[in-house]
Image 1 (cartoon, rainbow, N blue to C red):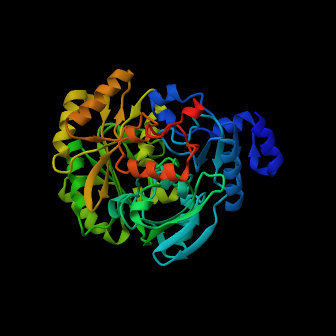
Image 2: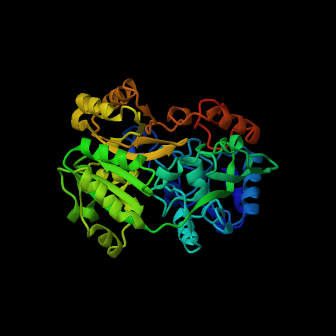
Image 3: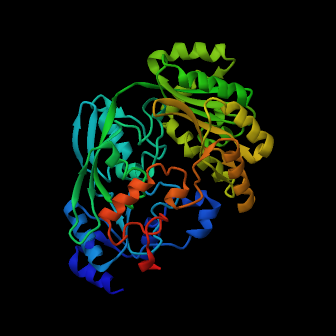
Length: 448
């Protein structure tokens, strides 16, 4: 392609990558969690990878691409699950990982460049008596902008909510996809929503300011119950407690946790488990609640985690799915929000209809101030049609499904802000060059 030769003439060779194996690697995420996406996205790649070292260099790349009508897909850590970063129309994979500087940390807020890894940000904050409010289980690899543009919530969402909750994302710097790119400072909540979970179709985030929390000394606990119902009822009691401060309430139906290989000495194939992070000052209060609820815990668990340099985040959220897939590679998962007023009845109906085809995994979170049972159940996959029947079954009984088997933004179930996202895209990306094909609302006929 002629534009690749022009690219080499105009930019430093150090930031341009055309080796086929590398381009293919950088064009992918964890889309293979889905057997449907695994088939539809397997052979979609960019034409090259560009890794700008400064925001100014990134802007020059954007201008170059826009003048030649070359698609751009922004990439952070590549830890998404829906094919968000997979180029459908070739073009440039814009690797933002070199934009990773700390810009400013104040009491209660932190500003970093887009490519700063959340694990690095957490370590930096904790050295200053602060911490991230919440983060995905992939936080050691996930980048700040990648999480904002492709994520939802995570460890800590039980206290602080999700990316959409007001006061979590405070300001974004966004570069538009134009021949003369604009540098936007976005602060208003309704405008921030145009870029949260947008797959990067509405603009390229280069900096972000987020709210932080005061550092807490977290204590890791694994709780066992003989039945899933007992585990769920205990987890609800803990989740809604205003007395106990927690960062994680993660429930697994047996035998899911028995596939957490590093924790084999603590798990079995018959008991439901709850993985917790609790304020270390409240260990005795938690122990009393466990005993009152008929559960059991192992006093040596926290010490084991520390001694082995493990992270409980690696056994929660979508890492639960990942551990299962290591030994059941043909299976998959769903994402759904159960109704907090009748979630137990919904679980019973799911088990009645589908039995062990669905293995329950809950993550309790806060959404707009309400504690709700979010879920990422493992699905024993057989056919696409059967998977759709399970999705339909979830919806029939009132579970809000966020479908992880589509790369189309508005089909994923998190579409509350899709109109705003597409409005911003039309204003910021007049030729529809940013991650084309990820929404049905904007025409990409010029790339067909």
